[in-house]
Image (cartoon, rainbow, N blue to C red; front, side, top):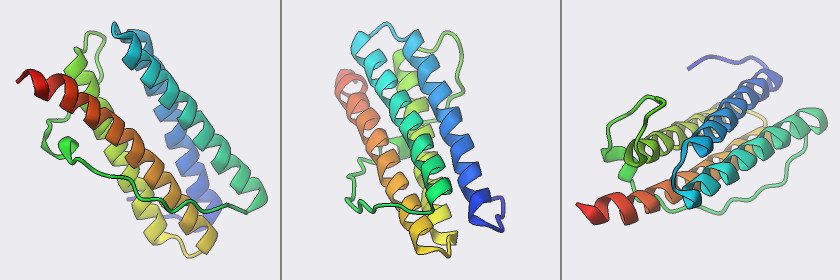
Length: 151
């Protein structure tokens, strides 16, 4: 993991990751045949955009309000093979990609929280980790209901 010296560097890094997540979910939404999952990806794109705004606001104001609610983990993502995005991804591969991306985002924010010395920044990253866990749970539930149900 890259080392950061000041909190603005950490926030900039996190903002860049939220921009990448927004682009990924926007692209996946456009490729979905299933309108419900297209809507889910669009909703997550908006949430990633909101995360970016939260991070930018915190960078400006240096304040953050804590939400420490824990999210369940079905751990389905732990047992799937990583996939790379392609133009012809099937539904299962798209869900796996989304689960893996959310798991990585969760781990990133968890690790950044552990590195943060500033309590406000630590709480921010813990909160963002829980939001990413919520996203992963949504994809795991869909995978369980659609993919594992058929097997």
